[in-house]
Length: 434
Ligand code: ATP
Ligand code: MG
Image 1 (cartoon, rainbow, N blue to C red):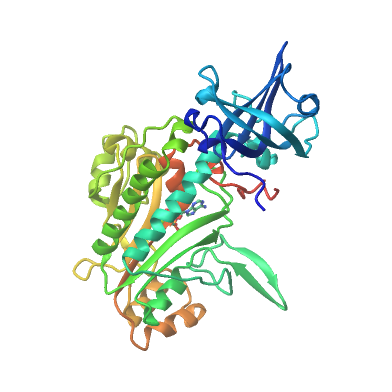
Image 2: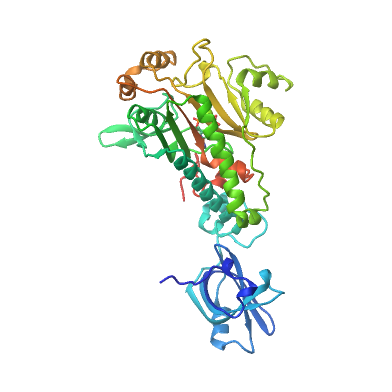
């Protein structure tokens, strides 16, 4: 039997007279002259429990006085309209039970209005998430996932899972975490790229996967973690333009879903969410270089990767979501399809938020010979990719797809400073616990 009949959020002054059972945390206890208050906090907010000392059962008063802050309590009582109480109601308790007492002192104070150090918060994440503004962010993340999944289902895309323990790197390189796998070395997968492409050869036609990617990059930035959730899509018989349309629709759809369905959470965060308008602007890499010339002091040649400063400059100049398209083939992975008539340029794209990259995608190489050539051009050994290449020799449709970082989508949506704020238990170079 569930120990509550209502969340605090279900109660309004109009419910005056009804009996409710609430369960949650003792947010605050105030013992004044003739009256005492217990503020109970649950997922949905707060309820003021009012004890009139002359009228309340002395045993109930005694229990409330003995409650330590952040203990888990259950309160049964009657709703009373009270204009002076927050949200216009209070609960007059007939019974209060301490279900789990909290020790003192607390590792951090969930009522604290001032922000404490991120590290302290992450060390006591369970306590940090009790703060309504932190919880609201993760509830919105769940809504984002729901909206994305519904978008995928609506487009007839099948959800799949691919292995996270793998034998080879997706793109070569050193940013892999080795693990010991019986008598062999294996790795944590850095991307489902090769597997989702193989599924195109399997005739699954349209797939999506929402799962972890692992990157042993040593950087310490506000937008990178060593474990992240990637939202991956791959669609057969589609070109780069088709999947860009799907991507912008999915992203603006997530904003719309959150703005319509998470009004309470947005209120807690004090956010007025603007839904980005589709279509997003498309800017070619070459145009971006031209724009970047407006930034003093930097010389960039065609073929250079856009550095962080240029990325920021472009974001500030453009001021909204945009796509960067038509990249030099030399700086995009081997599986990105070069244009037939100008192979130095490819059908790769990045989805950018003014603050940072959110997603990368492309039309892929589906021709076996070209793929082997491209792998060699990148100084990689095709032999290491045999399991992947095999899927291209027996009938592989043209296909396109993308990978979108969940936490980057959420952190930019909610204007969070640091990606660690958008992940419940983040993993970086220094943090493996909790
Ligand atoms: P960046 O250039 O910003 O480091 P990337 O180009 O290396 O990103 P991709 O390999 O294109 O990243 O991965 C697709 C998406 O997955 C990225 O656009 C990003 O949203 C997310 N992502 C990739 N790596 C990380 C990471 N280390 N931490 C958080 N999210 C990541
Ligand atoms: Mg990228």
